[in-house]
Amino acid sequence: MSKGLLLIILFVWGIPSTYFRNKFRKIVYKTDDWKINIKPIFLKELKGLFLNLYPNNPDYIKSRNSYRIYLFIYLVLFIIYLYLDEINSII
Image (cartoon, rainbow, N blue to C red; front, side, top):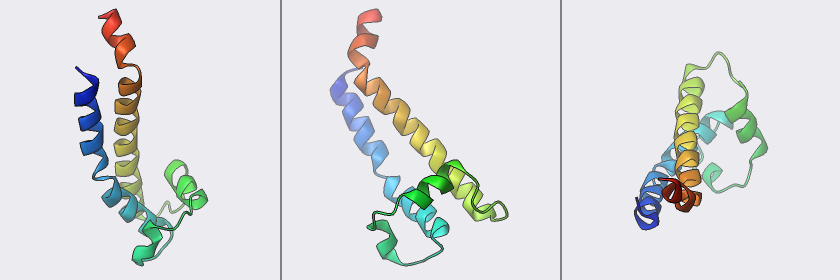
């Protein structure tokens, strides 16, 4: 696989991030205001991603787990992109 193709895959995979992050942030910050997407508030969002802020809210848990899976796959693709030359030299 070439780096160019992987870069395109990373770009395409990044497009739905706005949907997942928007949905997750609205639940974490308990708002429907669109401005939550452009505010640089990260601490509560990170706590919500790695901890269990609202254990009795099934929408939060479903959104958090979907966002975690999405970010994990994004991280794996990015690591492969960074180390693609080393991977190709081994193979």
